[in-house]
Length: 574
Image (cartoon, rainbow, N blue to C red; front, side, top):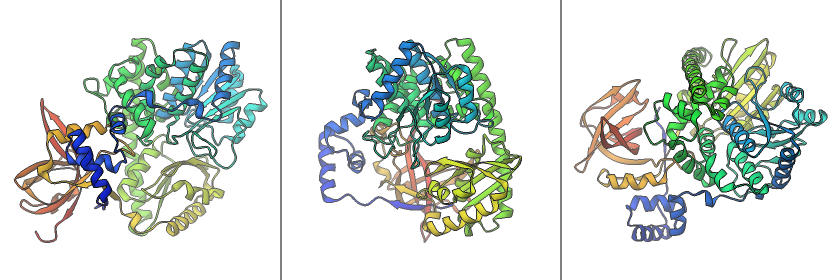
């Protein structure tokens, strides 16, 4: 599927002047100066901070309105020997948040344990059954991480049972807030915290720093000690890698390489990533799926056990179990994806005429439908909701396309749902089977009225025009200073027009396109992942326009520059 190229506007006159000033001061390639100007980073002090992320530049945790209250309550619990339970979520953000607070509070004398809900038994977030379990265990104070902001009924039950709860979360709140002892969430409507895009683990980290500062512990060492967990949860949750998130990701990736956490070390080893400098892609595609597999296939408690482990033998055993669960998850993913595609083929014979896709089955594993929904969005480029039913009750995951708010759509059809939650691009829901048809019809109507034909063509943001003769090692070395890359700070995508195909393109692996192009006496090797369908239309000597990013590729000890192909537009006359 060809993409809709969204080419950045040319720099304005003032921006051109800023660009020239940066080139003169930094002695950098013009493209680097342009990238900085487009990010609004134009002063040398700002540039130095951007290129050298430091934990010294994060915000004061007490800028959260309820932080004083929350930190004092935890201090009191520690001093009185009350049992604190960290109540997490089963994804990477939730498990790293849980491990972080467990390790950090235990280190300063807290009587503490943790609870992660079971995906199939408890569902997402705080549950009444989980709350009852904590009461039986003797918990006095609950700290929720990465969940709880919309748990009105569950928090009410916590209060009735004589416990108290501090909610830390980063998800969007509904109009009514839970009656918690304290709420720490940068997205609260009255929040004055300057940075709104923290992951759940970032919010938990802020709480831990506040407690250490209040209790006059060495908070600077803490900031260093646990930032590997913060980086892992932040990158895995696909939040913007801007501001504080980028600082956490950058510093934390360095700590992961230094192998402080023996549990994560064992997992990194099994993932085949122990002999390289980790980047954000290694987390998203290598580490995060393995940790998530524990919650999808079994119990996410195992993932937390791995992160808090102190024994190497135990760490190795846990990592091997998680590795096996991930292999099983991959097999189930593939089978479920094939089944969903078959359903779509029958249900939507003309997929281009539908505005969303809802597919359901009694046989799908609840732990993989979110992953598969994402793959279906990639294939069909429509909002997708997958639902698996058991005894007439459906558990669903929804994924959206760029620029369409799925959460708003679910709010519109919420009267057909038992529960739902999430954000703009990803959501979870539960539904009774008798409401499925009316839910589908109402959702299709809403989306058809709120989405444009243009939105149903995948966009590709192009940062700038680049000629092949501008590409060299110096450019890439400067470009790598912008890392870690991720949402809000993507690796730049360039376009070059009228390049000529050199030699014969071919496919490798699972539908990956390899080709070489030339222009003005310069060549560039390209690989296009999942772009093999272009092959029949590419001939030696033909001219094409290409969209691509650049990276170093090391193979058999040799490092070269490689273009990662994103899309091809054909030149009319070939």
